[in-house]
Each structure stands twice: as structure tokens, then as C-alpha cells.
Image 1: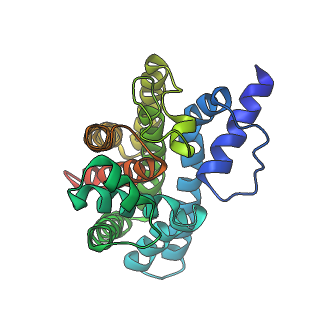
Image 2: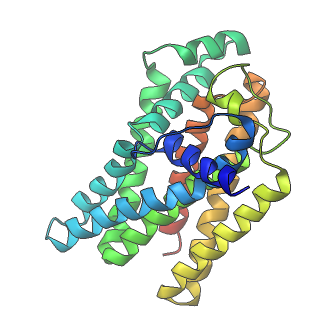
Image 3: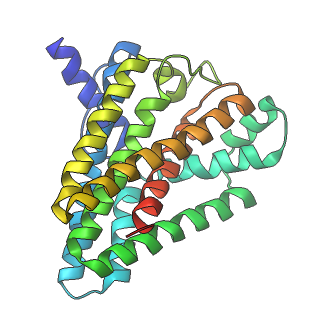
Length: 260
């Protein structure tokens, strides 16, 4: 079990980040542990993003540049993989074509108009919210970045739960799809929401509630996209996972911007 857990952590960091972690085992048992560890990978990415943004702000850059830096770090740490998945998912959904044709569109290397517009709006939304948070102080911006990253990877854990089929028989989506027992996914969601609430408590009782709601809002938005993709494509793909991740990150930030 210890060996499996170790391989699962490697799987999470090796597939969800570009950090120098070598994946030495690639099977569904490892994928199950890896997707349960996805929020941990998100925490590391989020702390790095928040740290860079906070240092930028403290160095006198201003909240806008700090926000851009915090958005750029996760993109760099994933080589834009999740953003690419979001764009491909948008192109597939926007094509209005049958599932087989839509999946073929998503596999193409180019990005269509739906993908371009979606990427633009999502990145603008993320920068806009973080601009507001960093305007309140470096701690608000850094914590917002961390919570969004954790919620985003937690959405991948839930998207990997049993009962969610793969759309293709090959690829990362097929490897991780339906690997995580639903009760484990819900437990991971509860733990992550509680930890984010605990971090938000640094800003008072309302801060704890606000950050917990950000996680729940992120999961709700991701679930809506996930269900639509399953209906539309017949299951999930690696691109759908990317779309779910970016949707959750954006939704978490939007919730933090509301009622702040």
C-alpha cells in the first residue's frame, strides 16, 4: 500500500504538473490514488502561484501585474495543458456536430473560434478577480490563488469517480476515468473544503465561509460542465478534464470576488 501511495503521488505530480517527477507506474490502481492526490498537486501549484504574485506585489509591481503573474504560473507549470483542454472542449461543444465528429475536432492541433473566445474570457476573468484580491492585500491574492488551484484539481478527483465513463478507449481520460470510488471523492471534497475554510479563517469567520463556498461553487460549475460533456461526447477525455479544471479554478475565483 505504501508503494502504491508513493506511485500515486508521482502519478499526480507527473501528469498534472511539469515538476521533475518521474512516473514509474501507469495503471488504473495508481491512477486512482493519483487522482485522489490531485488536490495536493493543486496546493503546490497554488502556493507557487500565490507566492510569485505576492512577491511581485511586495516588490512594488501593483495588483494587476501580480494577478497576471499568479495566472501565468499555473499555465507554465502545466505547459498550458489544461488551457489547451479547455479550448479543445469549447471547440468540440461549439461545433454542434455528433459526438464522433466533435471528438475528432477536439483532437486536432489547431484552436477554433470557440476555443479562442473561451480562453480569452476565462483568462480575463481570472486576472480580473485576482486583481481585486491583490488590491486588498498580498495575503488575499495569494490565498485566492491557492484555493482556486486546490478546487481546480479537486474537480478532477470528482470527474474521475466511478460512473463517469471515458469517451475514448485510449488516452489519459481512459486511464483515470471511473477509477475513484464516489465516497472517496466526496471525502476528498469535504477535506479540501474544510482545509480551505480553515485557511480563510485567517480573515475571520466570514472568510472561512467565503473560501469554503468558493470550493463548493467551483465543484458545482465543474459538475455542470462534466455532465454536459458526458451527455454530448458519451464520456470524458483528457481535454474534458482540462476544461473541468479551468472551469473550477475560474468559478472559485468568481465566488471569492462576490460578496467580498
